[in-house]
Length: 165
Length: 109
Image 1 (cartoon, rainbow over the protein chains, first blue to last red):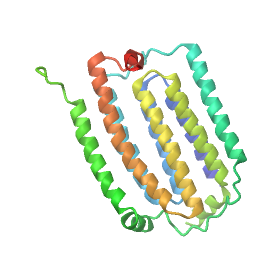
Image 2 (cartoon, rainbow over the protein chains, first blue to last red):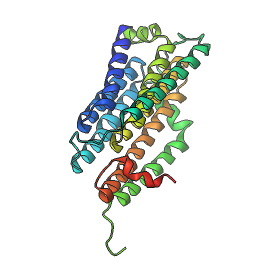
Image 3 (cartoon, each protein chain N blue to C red):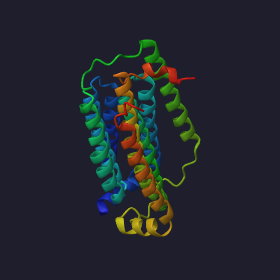
Image 4 (cartoon, one colour):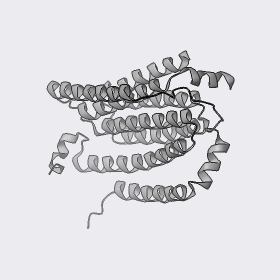
């Protein structure tokens, strides 16, 4: 019970640190910490497959990509030009308005069935795999084409441009 | 396993909605107040993760596995998006030797 609140508090703290830290490398590391708390959230929700996938994809692949780009471009300095104070305040106020709107709409929502969990283990690898390869087979195969296209596109974009072109 | 299950039943669904709303808002604020393109990109990732968590929570509370399959697809999409986005950032940095988004303001119109 209390584990959820501790982890939720950590998530919020790390997410705030991501956007308010000056140094981009520290920001990436706090982002990894945020993803780790999300992995714990998935375990609490008994979605073990998602926890493993989140761990591998976000904390493995995406962290390496971000850190690689940061180190490659030598951007690990905190000499970033900041926006003016007025723009920051306006941005924070706009975000606060969004939060108030979301919470207000949540309050008007009738959430009667808050504890409907009969928990048949739908998040386990076995059950999720059955659903994934029977009902969602076509989207699953299409996502492989998406990944291939993204790979080719990323290589093409990051390639050094030809001088004669 | 029994311990985990009793944990879920104790936490109301409203608290998951609240947590996701807060994380999503933090992502929006990050996009609005920062000028470093990579940090903006990370804020987008935060928003994606908030939505993922909410989908997984809804899926667990309603006992329907489709939500978690959808989260899986969003994760595959996010990996592709990060690869292409970072390639674009690398290209921008190569052309302007900076990742300040204010330099790109000629893209506005």
